[in-house]
Image: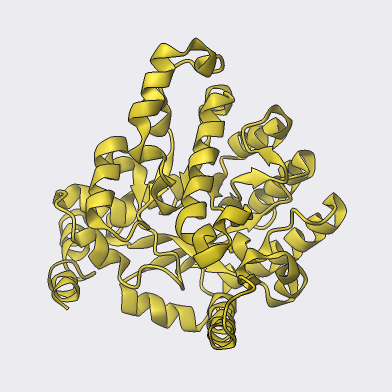
Length: 355
């Protein structure tokens, strides 16, 4: 209760953001609170992807009561993600001016399908997402999805999302089928992302390793493992050197990567074989990426800010299943007023070109 009260009293939208707006004028992007981690689904597409989704899987020994509760919660989550109207009321309650909408890859990943079928599912999702953004363009921006396991097709669909649909970029998972996202085969996709100026938001589609099956460890531990692998792949495989102008944001604060760089830095120094594709230390690559605030612990968020810089951190709620008070959560940290305002909206406005 004290935590909620502190959030509401000190860091509501009428506080720091409004103060900055008064000082710097109505066009100041810092006055907008922008949530970069907000999910949508297309119900028709989900009906085809759900049999392959980790979201629908429970251990065989789960009781019927728990199974029914999970099913009820799942339907509520799908309904909230599919909606473009009620979410605006939810945004107002959360103090969020704009959401960057992205398809939930936990629910709608298309790696199971052949490239042609996967592209069709992605295109249907992207078309409906673009239409949803148009219902309230002052409140929404959008990121499409692509069949990343078919990199050439993914590059073409990314280009269509940006140039034809007016989306800000795409969201991708931490893997492309059996490939890591930094492998050479995916370079056509990364080249298209850099050429179009698209934002690439990396969010796992779930970890299907049997070790993570019980207790929903795929979600509590597995998602962060996936993000850690994705970041490692980007710098170990040389993607960030080959395409230095990429605009990449990693979900959930970058997984475990920003919190375990000591050992990675040690390997970089002591083991030459680890740095064959790298021109700089791992920490320098971390500061080429962006990260959302979806960490649920203010001390952890403060460490992330210390590690990568406040200019690399963006507000993220994981709507509708994550942090219910993302603005207040950032307000629990001890960072300064300017850094807090940048994280709440200024950094996202810059990254996404929001005026």
